[in-house]
Length: 71
Image (cartoon, rainbow, N blue to C red; front, side, top):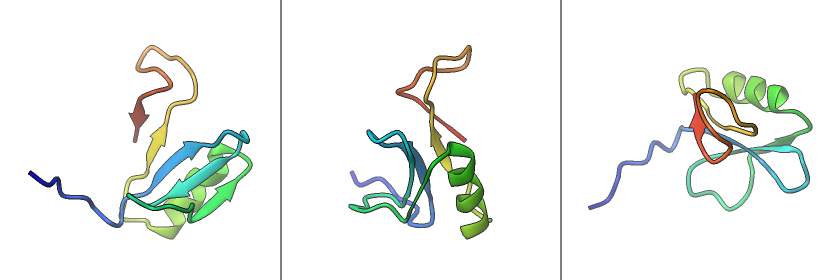
């Protein structure tokens, strides 16, 4: 069964280089790359105000670990 993928959804993930990439689902390349997570979030919200970007956790918190996503 295929899962519906919202093509307008954006994901913010940390790259090996330490910067942050903004990607669409199933993309091979980043839409944009930023030095900080905050810059990537701001760009994603400005680029597509209707979508809630999914943000990769980069540290351990009460609510999750680095392998989890948050909105």
